[in-house]
Length: 288
Picture 1 (cartoon, helix red, strand yellow):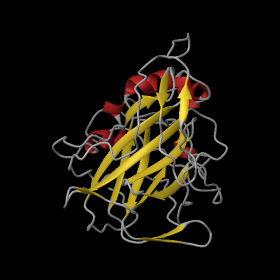
Picture 2: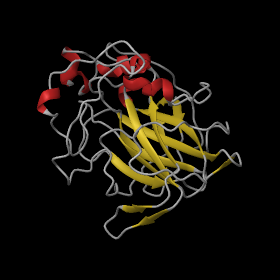
Picture 3: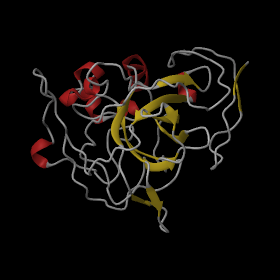
Picture 4: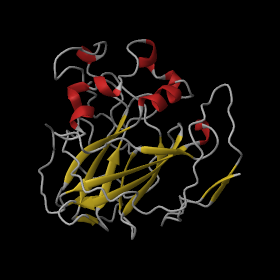
């Protein structure tokens, strides 16, 4: 038996789970079945995570403070353990707010259902350092909040989330956005007032796993699957994947993943650690 122990979080989203024996099926690929017994920060590598663009889909009015951000969105279960380290002291940071947002399984963001008409049928550009296409989907549904949320790091200096594996859209590698706020204030409506912004970045996934999930429901119904397909990490628009490694390539923005069961369809858990300058203060919006 492959037994996976996940520490109980404040919202009871991370539970002690006993899983079935590892096996393969026609539709799933066995990656690993590694026992995981803690949710402490996964490494103490004191490397600064580079600042990259927040993109066009951040909602500056404040995301809900919650761990389960999926709402009604269908997709592969994804649990996230995001650690935060202060690169000035090389010590983990408790009670900093980690804010994340992402596309759904078919490549759309909450509040942004349709692209600008002149971009609707554009294809990705190729060649040059700043190749690619960032599709512009204006915000027309202001009350939508799915796949958006923020949560503070716990006593183990880790922010835990329950979400779905993100889909892709034209010109961008599969990714999740993040911001880190050392100073923040919870509001009565369940959102937060942002204080000092210490980091804006993006997380990624290995292309090998992306290719497996592309073939699963509901990801296979992504309308871009039958036109331009998914952009691989190394061809990411505006060199965002490359830039997310830092000028010397020392930071790794790719999640370390483990299966929650014997096959991918049972879900995955992703670990990553961000090195941030806790005393930094960046302006918003952060768009390079």
